[in-house]
Amino acid sequence: CTRRGRRRPSGAYRRLRSSGTRPGRPAQPGPRRSDREPRSYGGHRCCRARRPGATRMQVSALETDPLSARLIVTDPVSHEKCEVDILKEALWRPPVHTEHGLVLSLEDVVGTKVRALFDRGLARDLIDVQAAANRWSHIELEELGRRHARDSFDLSELQARLMGADWIDDTELAAYGLDVQAITGLRQWAQAWATDIGERLQELETPHEG
Image 1 (cartoon, one colour):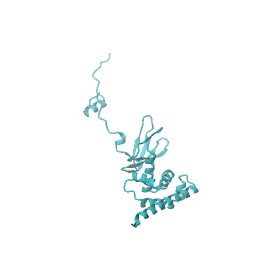
Image 2: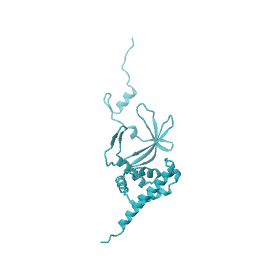
Image 3: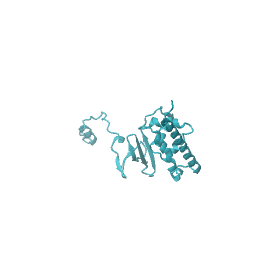
Image 4: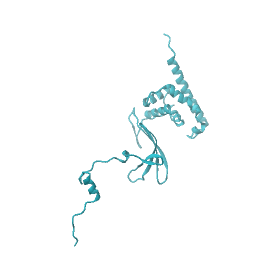
């Protein structure tokens, strides 16, 4: 026969009592891991992403600003890395339902690509916008980009980005799968759009005779 006395409260029970929370009642939710201060990893601010049944992934931030972030997600087992862009956008059309979930409407996607071309003018920005050039005119593309512009959308600045296509190295464009013919076509398309913008800007500056 074993004497059964009063069981000593566990550490978790004592912590609950000290925090003022009674056992049996749900505690106030604490901060989620995504809300906590990210950890430092490899010189970058880093946190760990986790979902049930999955390996913890290491996430480091490469670029951040109030409306966007570029992350590198690394599998700690295979060391495979994947670049992830997170953007905060004001959408002009409702998201579209697909078999993979909700995605941006085509107009919003193209608008963000034109904005990227306006802001950065990188090789991939030119390639992305050219892919939509057969569906929208120059003026329509400009309007889509203007909807998503963070500040003013100056056509003269967009013209300068387009003219900069001639200064992008062929090897940089070839890295995206473009051959010599495609690179030539990209530059011709960019130059034609830049010329069109220049002509329209000149018309606005030229006084009309009454």
